[in-house]
Length: 549
Image (tube, rainbow, N blue to C red; front, side, top):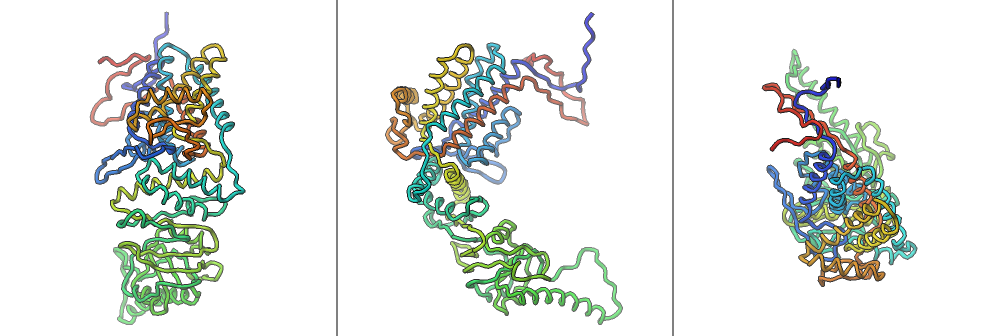
């Protein structure tokens, strides 16, 4: 007799395993892919042909063609589809661009593998073949990537500008890519060897044209809320000392339910005088320290503002923590929580401080910062969504330039590197026997999704263009890719459609790992939500049996 089955799970728990579960995971990822197929965010586009997606949420609309931004805003529930969101975020954090590329590649890998899974091929066999194919592809990229000489600064700058322009080609500001590519390279070049992204500030000012945007070699932030007496303060200093505080410089209001019992008017006056003396004592210590610019994260009241104005000091309260830390890293000194020890070693310094009108806003500028190299990009534009998308576009370009400096090897974009890898893997698959031949061939076919999607978004005949690319790569045209301008193919390396090789390596690795992860999951158990009002839902599926429809 068979022993009776013992159910350990709560009634209503949904369990599914085996091939139906694998197919369900793959289908969920295909849905995520379809959400992105109408977008062109590949950093190597040759010209503007991208479409932009508008996502509406309560109270706000987001216009973007950045893959990571869209996937973050989408409410993805399926755990397998969430894997695609994770790899898009990792690509954005690691290299800054190619977020949609990595998502499309992972989804296409799964699409090509779906027939093999349905036919009963074991997932571990597929995973082994895919890891071999990924290692071959990565080694091939490193082999054919072109290194750039760092000794020639002019040549290196031209390379960086071309990489930045390529990253901006598919963005909203593609028409001004020459203007912004130079600005991005100047911004990254102003940093120290660590190339810290935190040292590049981007401030958005509504109004004006895109060409009114400019780069400031130093720290800049918007003028904070100020009290009466602020207009009497000087707005420009040379070589000022800067006090960075986390101290509240105003008379504190009485707390709720506070009670002070006094017996005479003199006692009450003593309490008031003590409060004023504490504030004036703080202000006097700041003045005696020699600081000419006082910045505080906490409020600076009207009394303190007038006090500093009478003594030719500039003050700003409620400064954002990010701006305060960037000023500290650039100008030196340290943020103080008290005013008892304002010595020269805790005060910062810069060559020039001034307050300037930018559009309808006033900004504080710190130039000639000695401690660390930093810069700020002042972005101008019309609508709020427009400037936000411009900021995201510049972030991608900055990340690409940073990676190009750290990794001095580049490859051609526009689908050229994917077609070359596809041809290489297809040739390799014919030299090996067994199931791996088919699986590596499927990997090679999946790589063609990049040039195919470029053609589809540009309105070209993808089949015709891909046939031309296959023939050209078979003849040795290694860098031939999609030419968006002429509806044809072209040598994209000669056309300066470049990108750092690390972008392609990271995209292939992340997409392959995501596909392998999804294939390795063959069972899911989903607990029903606890409900106080009623019993849990229906019965589970059991051993992979689908729901009755």
